[in-house]
Image (cartoon, rainbow, N blue to C red):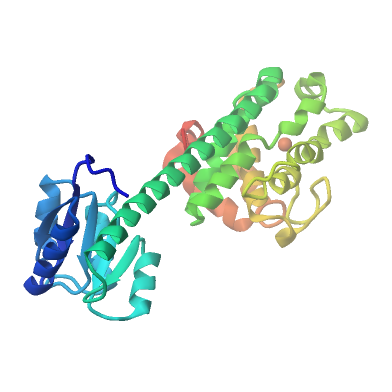
Length: 340
Ligand SMILES: [Fe+2]
């Protein structure tokens, strides 16, 4: 039961048939609680919505200036926060289902039901839309918290180890730019960014001295350094990320010809994210200054991926990396790629 003291619901009815509009007006006048406004065309609805807010929209799909399911898309574009109930003359279940799939909250068939049914349907539609918006906001918040947590993990390592200070963030930004040039979806790019931000996490288990010592390491020490890929993957293995983050970490030193570590995987058996990560990682590492050597520069970095294109590195990732660097130069390292 609706609170009788609640303000009336501002309902916009978009309906070109004056008879149908009159009937709905009369039925809703009986139930009360609505402030009904009418538009006969999409253009009229648009100018009404430019100056007024609607709590809900009752939408005929066949208008003089808009037809079928396209009408729904246009209305959702005009009033994205307003719940939409489709009002159709076709006693066709499929239209209603398609409308709901398209983002409408419900549908009504003309000539079926009374004012109570229309009123209840609109009230439920408002309720459902409110829940949808809250759910979307909460998912957004969780996504942000996840990214902030991953950034904190990233910083934990970087505070301890000057070798990786800023390295993971810079690799993440380059990797996302490469992935975007390869045409990857935003979801996949978010995963790539997540994996990249913590790809060296396993170095937390490697003595700092091994990471910053100039010159060649002994085989034993290099073995410990190499363990960081598997150790990092193990640390995040229990986290149910919506992306293969553990595999990105485990495989970021694998090489196309099987010469990498820890498993010596080849070509397609290495996941695409790890192949992009490998390119971004080596380009950032070579072009940047390290505690044990000055920066070798971008030309040397690009020569490395070009000379080993197809053997060590994925050819498409190499081509896209060259494109990104040609367009943006080293500024790409400093971009905040995704999220806040
Ligand atoms: Fe690494």
